[in-house]
Image (tube, rainbow, N blue to C red):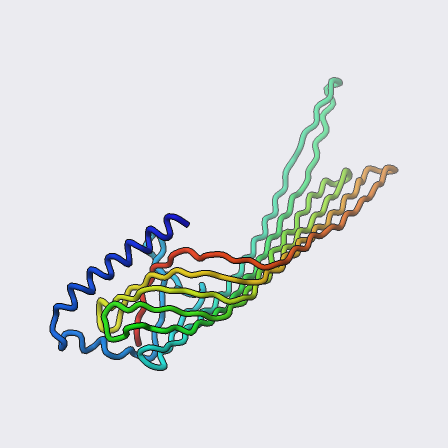
Length: 247
């Protein structure tokens, strides 16, 4: 939290300094800043200076109704699927010099689905300046489903199967404030910070099945458990640095 605020304050001081310098320029040199283009795309600058989506991992779009009023939407959709199969051998040695070799397999299947949608109304305080301060608010919704299926099969000895499922849902409102500096007529740098107030739902399920397979000693055990939590949360967001391209 401390470093986020320091980062934002540094960016703010730089922005004010640049504003004072540009205020000394002629009015003609700032004519291109008098009116926003209606459509723009936002990209977040990551720590490795890669361009990512600014609001949502898939798409971030802003529409200006006027110089002071804008609408921004962010959509995030991601999937993950991993399937790993392996076969191994085990050797058991006894004092009588008898050795038994067993082959067994381990299978692990992971899947994850994540989505989010956020909408913002943005208000620009002084749109006729090349550095603009803005604030905004709007609703958001998101969810995640993560599942692991683990199987350990030891022929003629045991078979173990485990399934873990995690589901989360979030819905709430968020508020933000930031600054946008136009370094070109159709491009700008942004720094943004905000807060979330939302309802969350958490559901964790666990299923275990164990079969002991030696002949005449068959044994089976099953377990099913779950944990559910929900409530309200208030969190701050990380400071985001990004670039906006006006179309």
